[in-house]
Image (cartoon, rainbow, N blue to C red):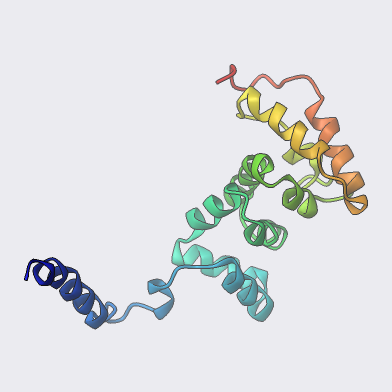
Length: 175
C-alpha cells in the first residue's frame, strides 16, 4: 500500500506532463533543445547566414556559447560557419568560448583555427590570455603540446607563439 502511494505522485505527474500541449502559436522548434547535429543540418540545408539569423530569432546563442566553451567537439566544429556570418558581439563571444574550450578539448579547437593565422580564427587571436586566469595559459600550453597531428602543425605553432608571448595587461592576477 505504501509503495502504491509513493509511486502514485510520480506516475500522475508523468501522465500530466505527457498530456500537456505546447503553447499555442509557439513554433515547434521552441520546445526542442538545439543540438550540434541539428544546427549542422540546418547550416547545410539553409546556409550559415540563415542559420545565424535563426539563432538570433530563437535567442539560442547562450546555449551555443556554453556548448562551445564546454569543449564539445560537435559544437566547436560549427564555429567557423557561425563566426563568419554573425555580428561583432557574437564573434567576440565565440572567440572567448574557443579560448575556454582550449583547456578541455585543444585538438578540436586547433582543428577549427585558421592555418593562415587570420584575424577571426587564427592562433594569434584565440590563443591569447585575454581575461583568462594565469593557470589557463599553463594548461593550454600543456594541451597544445600534447596534440600530435601533422595536419595541425601551423595552428599548433601559431598558438604556442601566442601563448609564449609576454602576459597581457588584462590577464587575471592568478586566480
